[in-house]
Length: 444
Image 1 (cartoon, helix red, strand yellow):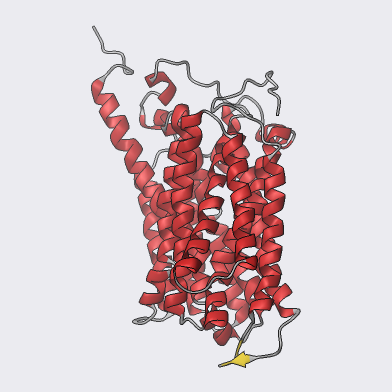
Image 2 (image 1 turned 60 degrees about the vertical axis):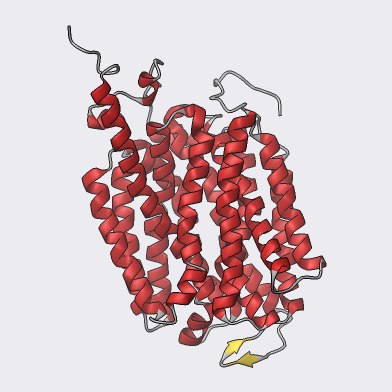
C-alpha cells in the first residue's frame, strides 16, 4: 500500500531541512538589507567630507535608499504573490550588489546617489519576499514568533553596521566596505537561485496546512490588480501602515543617520564610541521585535502589544529631550529603549495579513511596510533640515557641527511622528492571532 506523501516521514524530514535552508539564505540576504540601511550613520562624517555636503544634502543621500525602497514596496508585494520569493530575491540581490559597488567607487555626489538608489531598488524586494516565504513554509499559529525571529536575525546586519563597522574602519576604508558587501550580495543571489523554492509544492512537498491535516488555502483566482485594489480597500490594513510610518520610521531615520552625529557633536565622542549607542538602539530593536512578536502570539492578541509599544516610543523620545542624560548608562538606556519600543512594529505585519485573504498576504505586508520606509524617507532629511534652521555656521574639519538645541529640533519632530503612530495603533483591528474570514467584521 503506497504511503500518503503527507504522512511520509522522509517527506517531513526533507520539508524541515529545506525550510530552514531557505530561511537561512533569505535571512542572510535580509542582513545585508539592514546593513545598507544603517551604515550611513557610522560613515556620515566620511560622506560629508568626501562629497562636501550639508546636513540636509547628506540626509537626502542616505534617504535615497528609502525613497526607492518605499516606492517599490507595493511592486515587491505583487512580485512575491505572483512570481514568488526565489525570483524576486535573486534579482534584488544582483541589483543591490551592483549599486553597493558603485556607491563604494563613486567620486561624485551624483554617482553616489545613483549607487544608493540601486541599492534601495535591489533590497526593496528582499523583506517582503522573505515574509511571504514565511507564510508558505511556517504555520499560521506561529507567525508572530517567526516574524520576531526574522527581525531579530535581520537586525544582526544593522548591529554590524554600527559598532563593528566603526572598528572595521580603523583598518580599511568605507569604500572597501561597500564594495565588499556588494560582492557578497551577488553570492547570495546565486545561492537563492540554487536552493530557494517559493512554496513547498515547488519542491514536490505538501503544504504546511496539509502537513497539519488542514485543507490548503484556495489559490488566487483573479488578476493581481484586482487583488491589489482589494488590499488597498481594506480599512483594517491602514492602521498598521501608520504605526510603521510614525514609530519605526522615526527610529530608522535616527539610528540610520543622526544617532552617531548627535553623540559626536554634543558629547565629543569619537565615531567608534558614538556608534555603540546606535548599536544599543538596534540591539533593543532586534530583541523588541522577537519579544513582542512572541508576546503577541502568547496572549493571542495584536492590538494591546502595538498600543503599548507605540506609547513607550513616545515616552522614549520625550525622555531624550526633557531628561538629563549623557554618555554612559543613561544614554545607552535611552537609545536601547527607543529600539525596544519600535520593535512592536513587527506585530503589524501579522495584524495586516490576518485581515486579508491568504493569497494576497504579500501585498498586505508590502503595503504596511511602505509606511515604515515612507516615514524614514521623510524623517531622515527633515531631521537634518530642522537642524539646519538653527545651525550657527560652525564647521569642524569641513563638517557641520550642530548643538544640542539643534538636535532637539529633530528629536521633537521624531516624537511627533511617534505620537502619530500611537494614535494609529488605537484603531488596529484585533484578530486574536488568526485569519479573519472576509465576512467577519470584528469591532475595533
